[in-house]
Image (cartoon, rainbow, N blue to C red; front, side, top):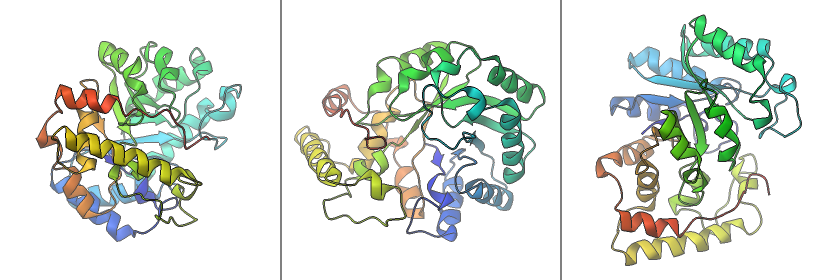
Length: 310
């Protein structure tokens, strides 16, 4: 179980304070969590600085992964936009130096590109920048964060030998990485960071047609229109099937166990902005993998959608 630190950045999430975030991260480290994923773009490095504060104050040891934002600030990466507009080599180095300062370290455990375009795979510029950063001791490992719902876009990048990890959306609704990406990562010994395990809250079971989001929070748009009703109906059907199959546990536990049941997954990185979320999520790995009949049932609930881009 890892710690997804987008939410603690604060600018795109509402309803919590820095003190909530600091308390949650401290609690996670107390319970033995040792992997944290953040990004320079999470409120202009605020998430990175909070992580540095907690690690400095607690003396805890943890692997920290961060990401280089696209220079053109376009998420996801667009086909047809050249590499030099998004990740020129000097910008890759400058962003890494900024994250090193924010995190208060000499070496970043895992640096990642925050978006990916498969058209760039053969370009020497990003490859050379990665090799230079490793040679200089600025980063230990390098990975890419794959565009929303596009796991196959990273297949060729994985085959370059330069990619140590991939970060990908993987959950009960979006099972697409299972087709090609996860088997390839297992074959090539590439680490897998599974993000969005709860589909931005849908798979917690807490979203109803009456749920109201702050207009300043990104989920205000993510669950716009009739999407809350769609989610409510899908989740109710999912829970009914699980109960009929005899699995009676909180839906978030099942959502996390689904991901951790796949042998290619290295870590899952839910956002945890409060101590109670930390206590609940970190209790899940001890439950072990789901049974094959339950996994087969969950496979029937895959949902082909893209609330980010629709």
